Length: 332
Image (tube, rainbow, N blue to C red; front, side, top):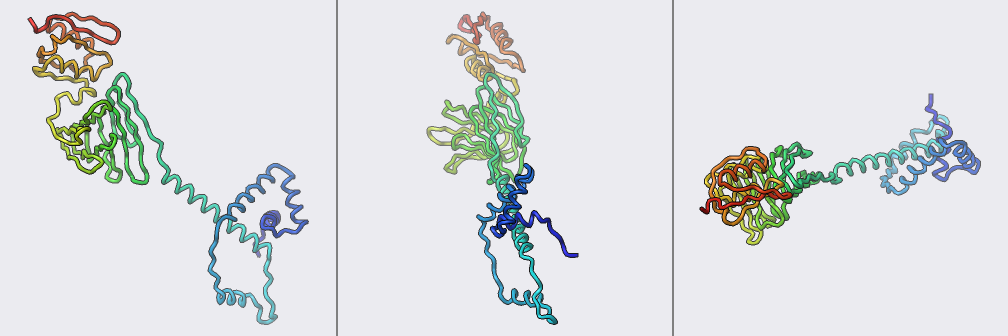
């Protein structure tokens, strides 16, 4: 049995193609105005048809093949050509065009999804350090006054972090997706690593300390250094030079709150502690060069102040966000 088609779809195809008679056009319009659903149905077909009109189709016409196809329809006994249904031809063309449009739309959506930038993820630590997990599964811990922005570049298959401040990274390594930290044209590339980056905007240096694994630490111009476990690299923004140093024992203190000081002057001790806590220790100049060997393990800054005060016989005064240590200390 020959395939049958819906009468109204036939008329709509002819109507949109401009092949409908006046009576057929009136019938389509009357049908569309009969209810809201019919009207939407016609509008959807019109949208597809209009979009199809913008598509340029390049058909290769083979005259010999066409003639052979035509001869196959001729009845050799009757010498007649098999009748061709013009409405079916119009309808078939219409559906082919509609299918082409739908295919193009689907391809466009796929292309957009595969190339459109992934929204950036921002992590900000204001008055105290905070930990977080990036969308790729990497662990980060931000020191106070630090801002981190993470974004995945689909086109380059690259995970990019922009950093202002100090942060600890335990990167989820992926050979197919590079992990790159960008600090205003100076970069740290992960090679399967746990490391810290210190890059406050007001500082003239950028510091990288590698705890485990390996990183590449380089500038936009291409020169740089490679750092392995238990090493430190420093970049000078003015001279644009890299150098390696021995990492400080408290390089991870902003994350662990573990401080170890061995015969270290009080001025540098206070500086390291103030870099981590919201409250600040304040000491006078005569206390700067008092030396102390001590370990603080995840203690509150008020407890730290009390330990220092007891050690040097100082008084403690608290005012707002400041803890002042006063006394003659080691000067006597």
